[in-house]
Amino acid sequence: MEAVIATGGKQYRVAEGQVISVEKVPGEKGAEVAFASVLLVNRDGEIIVAPDRLKSARVSGTVVSQGRGKKVMVVKFKRRKNYRRNRGHRQAATTVRITKIEV
Image (cartoon, rainbow, N blue to C red; front, side, top):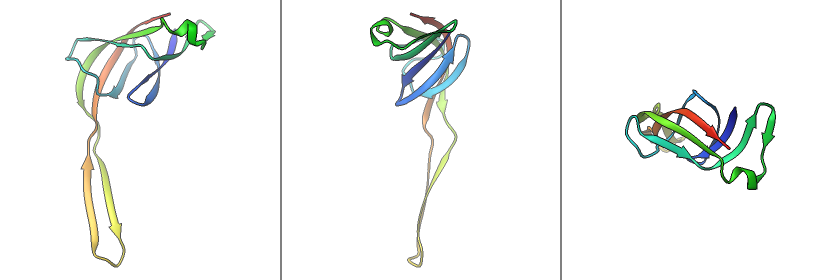
């Protein structure tokens, strides 16, 4: 069984047992996390997208770790003006193992 969930402004295609990295979700290592925003469920070839059937759908997972993603460098530059700025950013991320998909 597969599902498409929305969290942190992004959509993720998940299956039971899969480990995904999402934007920071509150909870310590080993805590249960539930994603209520389910957009699609594929149950053995039967695709469910009807909003009234997805209201009760939930995807549950366990927090594997809390951390930060890879550094992204932000560079500003204006030619001939001696203007250069370098700045780095690391987005907070949570690694989650998907344990159950319910419809």
